[in-house]
Image (tube, rainbow, N blue to C red; front, side):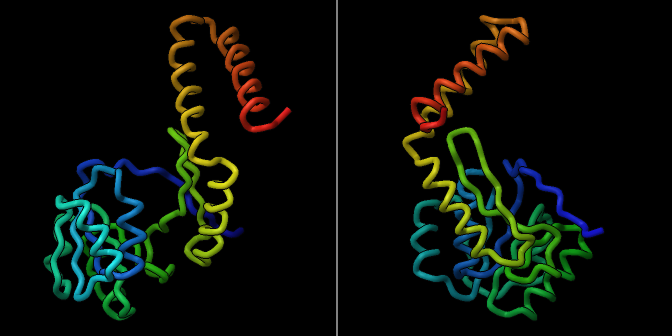
Length: 197
């Protein structure tokens, strides 16, 4: 039987996150961590222009231009290793494992404790897409497809649906009556805004 990964959404608020490397992988991780409330520390020998531009928006992110050292791994909750040197990634993954820290070694599935997913945000809803680290391009393509199907202007409707549900719990305390009311609301939304019968 083929083993599968267990998908989860982590609460990273106030967690201590280290990103090693300053290229495309770093930018991808920074974008994913942008609104998590995590404490982020980036260490790299070189930073791409795109990463530099991103970091100017977030002065709270700690940035150091130097090689990573073993003591940099202390007291971390999660580490992302995204250098262009596989040996460096492998070495520090082994050190982190010895410290009991979860590691994502970019583009190196066998040296990962977890895989990052490609996500689509639709108001309060998040879709996570993963290929178990085997083909990030597929995840990216599916994410773009979801974004086209559910464009940004529809996000407000999703927020409204969630708010209606919260208020309905007060107005209609009976679960069955509330379920029927919600079903009617969703059918009307689908018909009017998402062109579904």
